[in-house]
Amino acid sequence: METTSHRQSAQILTFPTAKRAAATNLSRQAKFAAEVAALRAQTIVSSDSWYHQAAIDEAARDRKN
Image (cartoon, rainbow, N blue to C red; front, side, top):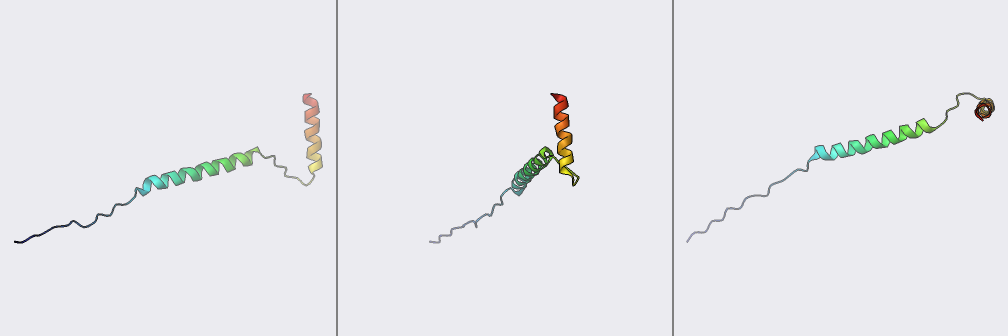
């Protein structure tokens, strides 16, 4: 009596890297967009005389009121 058993070897499956990469890329894009939005919200004064800019801003507020 002869018994033979044929076992199939394990099959290695890979994870879908494209979907993971896309999700990572989206989170990076969202982080970048949030950083850009935060930078846009800041007032940038490109002069050494900040007090002069403050006086201009105060005068503009007075004119609006």
